[in-house]
Every structure is written in structure tokens, then in C-alpha cells.
Length: 612
Image (cartoon, rainbow, N blue to C red):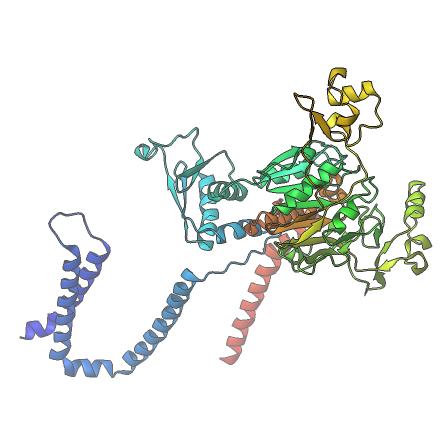
């Protein structure tokens, strides 16, 4: 009995330790139920330990009531409490995590565009990375994919070494090592390149998760901006932005034949010439069918019919020039910098970004006369309201009589203290803030009167001429393709034809002319009073204009997850240390700090000797 009372405690502890070891490390021995084994060891060890305490209860009581044990017990409780706090924090962070990225370019966090896409993903996304184990690029990629997983648990990733696990690569069409495969359902996308970045992963996810690729048609043939022009006035940067967002960019030079059925958004980028009646009708028919369009006007262009065309949609494009003393160095008030955005879905992220957007020779776009009370008008961009900043005053206004100002600018007058730059109510100037972009929603059932254009389509377009009476016979034959034997008689011209027996028969009545268009499905427009803000020269200075266009397209195509500020310039920020700073660091680390430690030691030693 004395042996059991002495050694049962040690046996119980050993059994509990063996149970813990068995639970953590289970060898692959066949025929053993390891779960039952470690549970049995744990129960046996606890029972023997309890028996030891009961057999030695007097010694146990005297042991646990000593001062050292009580102090140790209190210390153990404090340690357990601290450990418990950390365990709870870790458990909470497993489900609710938060990161702070203090780097200038936010290189250790995902962009707003990526977050908007992956947070709205409902499908399961499988990302398989084929990298050699120990690859440095794979380590960086793993850290980045962890950010994706933290934002959406539907995303999972795995790393496979093609050399160590060739059986896992047998059915995969790999063209090179360092490849990432993204899979959603049966759709696959491969990224085979070195230096894989966040944009590559996000684009691949969006390609396989997107239902269809929107087609963006740019109207051409009326002096609009050229998508292929790489010089300053061109729109080649716009094409690059749209392609990068996985849009299909197409030109539409034959608008008179109608808008293609697969058109997701129609873009009219600052035409400098009037459109023909058939082309205006084609746009109206497209919008009436629930179409989506971005219309950018051009103040100095010759498309004077744009304003009355848009007025039917309750959009007032004013023949005024927007001026502001917020502009970049080297320009003038006719190129206002805008930092005031409304809370619409298109511009909410632009407002939070607090970045400038540059316009050039812009005109106001405001709510027009009430065509229909059901049309919803929402401003997007406004000039900065007048306010005092430090010792200066910010101002903006719209000037209807801008010819003299532009003429003097062409002659080289750009002194900002000249009175011509200041608000003059006698000239009809309107003080800001001035609205420069609007979002328009046309509900089902809205009736839009037909626009009557004064520009007639030339016959070279293949359209039937509206008036052949002024043509000579030979010219009429050439236009209609009829020879002299097929010419109509006077009676035929009056609306009758001769039958086989010489009887006059009345021709079928022509279809009645369209008087108005009815919106059969909700349509949306984004109207911007400038098209220059997307030129290559402007986007190279302030790329936020590209975000305005991309956000507008995302809103129009109902892909709100793409609405964001996409600019994320990952640039190196080296630490530059001057010679005097290097000397300061050298002296401080090698001489001053050791000297302070020595002086402190000597001082403490002397104080101790004095106390003795």
C-alpha cells in the first residue's frame, strides 16, 4: 500500500502525458484505434492521479496551503488568464481580421477594385499554383493569396511542385513552370508568366467568374476621338484601360444602319459634326429598347444638334465655358481641376480617394426643362464651390460669352490678374458650383419626342434620298438605279401604277412617320460636358478621368463590383541618406549610446558605495 501511495501520482502523470502524445502523433500502425487508445490513457491517468490525491490527502492539503504554493498558484492563474486572453483574440481574429497598410502605395493590401470583385463572388474559386518548392516568387504569391482568402472564404488555393508531384500535373496543359490556374466550375484560366501581380490574379478570376464580356461600341465617322491615335489628342489610353478591364472595344462607323444587338454600351465621344437624321433615330431606338450610353459633348465642335437632342432626355447642355482658378501649373482656368464628386455609385469611391480630375474646355451639364417627372437626374461631378482657403479664394463659374476669352488666349494672353478671368454678372456669368456630368435613368413607359435633324444624309451612305425632285433626269436615274424605260409616268408619280390590263391600281400607303419613341425597358445615360478629359495628354497627368469612365461603364452594365479607384502605383521609395546624416548615425550608435551606458553604470556604482 505504501508503494501505491508513493508512486501512483507519477504513473498517473505519465499516462496523461502518453495520452497527449498519442493524440498529437498517431503512427500509421494497422489494427489500432488511436482515438480510443488516447482516450483510454487519459481516463486511466486521471483516475490514478485522483486516487493518489485521495490516498495522500493530508500531505496534499499541507502542501497546497504553504505560502510558496499559494503564490505559485496565483501566478499560474495570472498566466492562464493572459494565455486565455490571447487565445480568445486569436479565435476572434480567425473570423474577424483587420489589417493596416501604412505603405505609401498600399503595396501590402488589395486594391479597391479587387476587393469589390472578390467580396461579391458567390462561386467557388480554385487557384492552383505550379511552382518549384522554395521559389521566392511563390512565397510572395502565397502571401498575396492569403489576402484573397481572408476577404472571401469561397476562394481556395494550393501549391503543387511539378517535379515532386508529377502525377498531379499529368492532366494539366502546362506550358511552363511558374504557372497559376484559376478555375470556376468548368471554366479555366491560366497565368503563365514571371512576376505575377495582383492584377493578373484578379483579371483571371473575373474572366472565369464573369457571365459574359460586355461589348463597348464607340460611334465613329463624325470627328469623334480616335481610339487608335497614340499622340496627345488620341484615345489609345482609353482603349488600353477598357481592354485591361476585359471589355470588348469596337468601332461603329455605320450608325445609320442601327446599333448592333450585342451592344452593351454605346459611347459617343465628342463628335465634331452633326449626325444625320437616320443616325439620331438609331440612337433613340437603341435607348428606347433599354440601351445604355455614354455621351460626351464638345463645346468647340460643330455638332450643334447635340444639345437639342439631349434636351429631350431632360439634359440641358449649356453653351457656356466652365472656368475655375483650380488648375494645374502651366495651364489656365479653362482647364479646371475638380475634386468635388457626388455620392452616386459611380463617384462615391472617387470622392473618398481625394484625388484631382482634370477637364479641358468643359461645358455645364444640368437638369433641363421637365420633359417627364419620372426621369431621374443625378449629378456626378461639380466644380469646387466658392470658398476661402488660406489667403486666397477658390472660385468657379460658367461664362456664356466665351469667344473673346478664347480669342485672346490664342493670341497668348494668359495673365491671371486680367479682369477677363473674373466673374462678370453683366456678361451673364453664373457662379459655381457648376455641374459637369449627370447620370440619367429613363423608366419604362417614358415617351421621348422624335428629334428632327436639319442634316440630311448623303446618298453615298446607301440611304434612300428624301428628295429627288430637284435632280435632273440623268441624276435621278443614277441615284435610284432606274433606266429611262423604268421611269414613272405622271400618273404613277401621283400614286398610281398601271396593271397588266392597263387599269390603274393604287400603291400601298407608306408607313407613317415616327413621331415619338417609347422606352420599353429602363434605359440609362451618362452625359459628360467634355471629351478632352480622356485624351492621352490628360490621362498622363490625372488618371482619375479613366476611373470616371470605367465606373460609368460598370454602372451601365450593372457590374457595380468593378466600381473603384484603380490607380495603385507601386513605386520604389529608396531611403536617401546625406553624408551629414550618415555621420550622425555613426557617432550616435558607436560612441554616444555606449558612452551613456558607461556613465550610467559608473553613476549607479558610485551611489551604491555611498549608501554603504
